[in-house]
Picture (cartoon, rainbow, N blue to C red):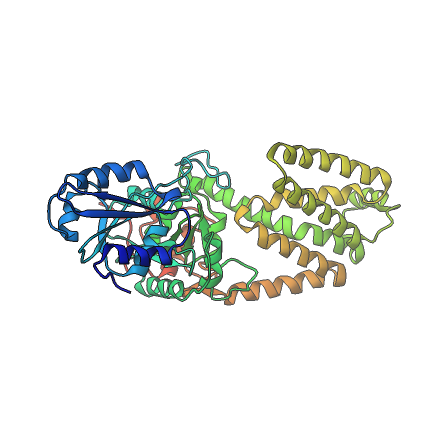
Length: 478
């Protein structure tokens, strides 16, 4: 429905679309006798700014009732015109007031939205001792400004889309033209446009629709809360996605090796970065497999234990009423409950609960003879090892349980069989044309220089071949 040109008729039509009590209108008349009406959403409109940039200049207006002429008298740097009433109502709900006046051919939209944001701070989930400390916040415009500050090039493209029938959430697709494959950019945009959902409160909602295997256990979309990591991934040829209301940015294509890398790896010597990456991998493997091999050794292969360790374990488990599998599952269940309770409860109570609960429950359970000391030590070490790679906690905690059940059923053969299934899936999985297990499968020799092994920056003169970037060279030697 288009604007009619009658102030009262158009105002009535907009109020019919927006019947809420917090949608207010303000009427005033210019010096030349032209009546104006501002329609705005009270909670999310900066009324002080609206008065300074719109009302005060127009009180002295003596020109013709034309949107183009009126717009030139406004001091707001963000103005545009619109004729569709439905789009005007959407702008009001977004916090941008609409200026109506008698005999108008268009309405003027004024950008005086009131934005409530928290301060930019270091994200708690990605702490680094060296390197930038900034993290994304919940406002997409501020997040895009953090990206612009680091990539001062006209090649940086930021395309905005509205996702969500009712939320109309702003989604920013960021990429470097000439570097990111256009096919990947177009595919991501198309998938975002096809999303038909009421509301998008967080970027995690989009991962389901962007994934080629939405019900997969393993991740298919990369995540980060740090602008420096986000920009580095874009510069390699990936496509980034920022969602209004979420501090977590998405990147695609995603490679599994990304989660074993840290931004700090690029600010320390290569040998140190290589050591920490290998350490993260070993910690994760120990966290997944240690409980399973402990159960398998107890049930089927006692000779796997050294004789002295075997005597110690035998003494610890002699009076335990549960089977090894049930004992380990019980301890794992208690660990998961403590973890969830410490996260969901108030901050200071949660800290006390996690420490006291672990000490009291563990000591009491051992003293009462319900569980053995080795079982508690193994599960505790496994729980710590998972946090060496925090971005994979959800996936690896499930894999740990799968390996535990396989070991309790058929021993080491079950562990080997479950591992084979996981490797088969990883080898065949891909997203947006990039194999998830690259550069190891398929083997890409040059990309191995920044995988688990970290070479000097001088050796990283080309972008990862796995990402199929159009601009392959990122470092030139004199």
